[in-house]
Image (cartoon, rainbow, N blue to C red; front, side, top):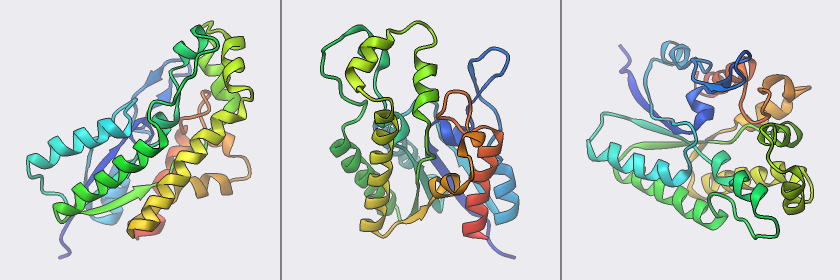
Length: 227
């Protein structure tokens, strides 16, 4: 009988399965990403350490703590970049004319991603990296300003709503670059989303979280690659 492989998922709200509740219009945790289906079809046992709102710095700290306990895991899947590329919109809205930086600078993101790969490999565990699903700038802009944040101040800073998309795309490109440079397997969920005729049908109202259809597509990406 084939040995069951133990897989650990290390990511943010995308891999945690966070969606928007249609009634309350608030984020809620769900089982939108059917990791159980992957467990059954790929003969693996999954431990999901993904956390809503986490950046790659948190991921590194979480991974360090986790590996100190000598877990019986064979593979660690890493998915970060969405929150790292984002801004503190409260500050942007309230501090017009101030220079703002994303939650993680791109150079720091690259270094920490490499540190995560080094840490995983040092334990003789296999790393796998996931790309990021695309986002929609217009939906996200409307979402972050729905509670009355100063749209004029935000637009003064970003100049163009599509900057939000391009910023996240830049972090995704860095994910791909690091994976290729380090010879780490890559699961390209972004490509699957962009191949859709209308990827907005796969996204929640906020323009950044996959909905149920999008979550199913993420599951399919893993099944297609590892069956």
